[in-house]
Length: 123
Image (cartoon, rainbow, N blue to C red; front, top):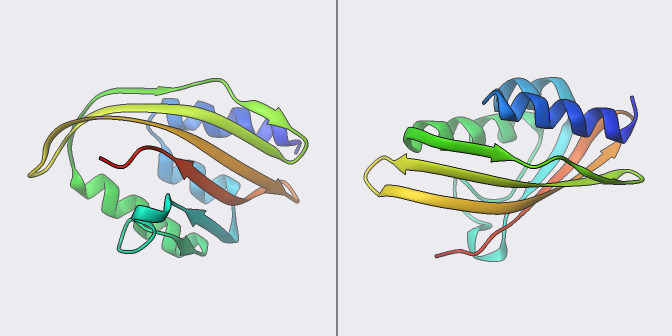
């Protein structure tokens, strides 16, 4: 599977809100997830391994009260890398409504995502 194929499949599933399905299908078992330095610790911080990435996703899903808008750009692909812009407008439990925008960069090796890294401003 080419990087473009992996990228397009990830975008397709994420646009449908199927984030966990995307991770189970497209991520390597030893994939890593990297957040901005200010957010690198804690349950939503940097993790290694598909199990930890799935747990991180579950923790995020449990913190969301309602999603009002979920947008993912078409991917930009270069060799084994691709990036997308994500925009989520959601009401977070106990925190109110949040308008979140980020750039997500993925590295693909042997037909699987081996790294995801997120770039966003921490407010």
